Image 1 (cartoon, rainbow, N blue to C red):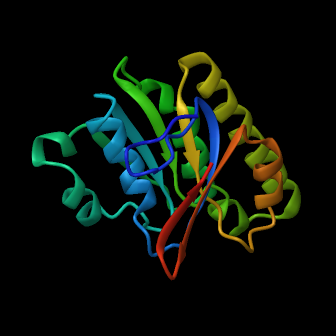
Image 2: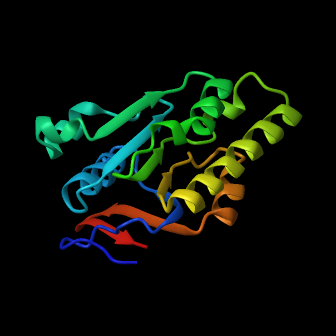
Length: 172
């Protein structure tokens, strides 16, 4: 995997789990790099209201902002539907799909069997999207989410971004 001049890691093709403090605009940076560094576009399926366009606008010019399209899900079924229909919104210019808080919605209002079935179907859809369209899929999951170990075990790559007393450290 390559990175950028400042060491920020570039997501690999396939599914990438990003581990980062929630106060860092890491996903916005990934979307901005897709636009600025690779000349591509990004799709973002947001849960938990993490797709701050304010942060994104600090990284991109107004005309570049139009190359990042954001959809929001408020239920597991909406999220599942957006993932299954994502291919409709892919153009040849899209090379990055971002899913913030991927498993969050699947933990709300569903019984265990529904969680497993719906989430696994969503995961299979993501894998197919990545393979068929040669995408960089970037996902986050909060630490206490019980689906996070599954994601970690089944993603192709992990990007770790941490803050310490000397600044931001990248690993991945």
